[in-house]
Every structure is written in structure tokens, then in C-alpha cells.
Image (cartoon, rainbow, N blue to C red; front, side, top):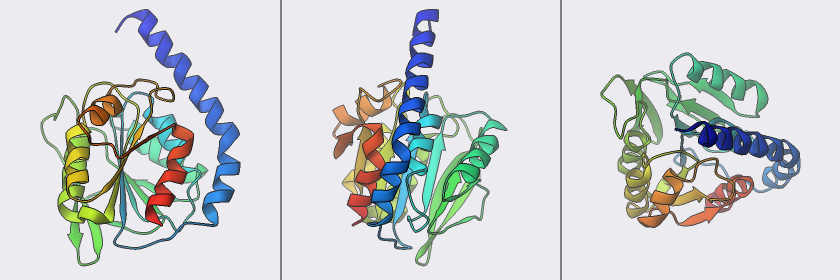
Length: 226
């Protein structure tokens, strides 16, 4: 990556962070009055470059009764726990770095640990996560495709998949598999993406049902839940 490309990414990240701070409170008030929760519902989010701010923007507008959320963010070890702790302190949701055996509950968010893949398994009417070491998939560990493929298999039409800003194509095929299994799917649009790579590939292969700006994603999730 060139110096100019790095600067563009940093500037877009800062701009999105500023916008999310201005919009979040008003959006949250709207969503709080409309959310419907269900234990068998699950939300899966994948992101890379610029994703930490994008995920924060979404989660801080969602109320505690939101169905459980699993997140694969391309992030190194240690930083994944710091990221989870930050989200836990600044949102209405219970956020933690995932550990094998964790159950997904309404109002909870599990973040894939850095350098470990994460997948879900159905346990009755609940979902449990497994975190494991493995080779990189699409150049990444954790891989979004690994998570999305498991959500497609275990949750089918009970799931909502969201692909956010990031370079490359990780998550695009997994999101397509989710959609083919009956899941609802959302892609971040080009204007609000720090890097319009992963969402673009997903959109082009038909994996994205709705493509929306970052500040509309939380409301779109709630609309799909309803």
C-alpha cells in the first residue's frame, strides 16, 4: 500500500468516526421502540480495514434485546480483547472476546479472537461458538468466510449477515452461502466504506440483498428482524 493510499484510509476512517458520533443517539431512540428479540435469531458481522469504527457505529445504536451477534473482524491478538472491552463499555450490549463454549444470548456480542477462527454450532434452540487455530483463509485468521459458512449451515433463514468495509474478498462467498440458505444479507455501500473491497465483491456476486450506508445498517437489521 502506498503512503497516499494509507492517508486516504486514515482520513475516511476519521470522517466516519465523526459522523457516527453525531448520529448514534438519535438512531438509538428510533430502534429501541421497534426491536423484536428471538433466541433462535442470530446476526453475523464481518469487517476488515475501517471495521472497528463501523462495528462500533452499528452496535452502539442497538438495544439490549437485540438477538445475539457474532463478529469476525480482521484484527491481531490482544487488540481483539481490547476492542471487545471497549465495545462492552460503550454500548448497551454485553460484548466479550469469544471463547470456545460461549453461548450466544440476546443482547450479547462475541468477537472472534485474533489469530483464531470462530464458528457457531446449534445447541437446541441456542448457538454456541468454537474458537480454533488454523491456517489463514483468504489471507486472514479469523476469517469471515469461516464464520459465515457456519452460520449458513447452523442458522439458515434465522440469520442476518452483514459485510462491512475492508480490503479483499473475505466474507463474500460466505455471505452468498448464507443468502442461498435463506438468510437476510446487508452490505455497506461504497460512499460510507473506508475501503470498498469486501462489500463490493459480495454485491457483485449477488450475496447482498440490501446495500445501505453505514448509518442505516442498524435500522436495516431491526427492520429485517421485524
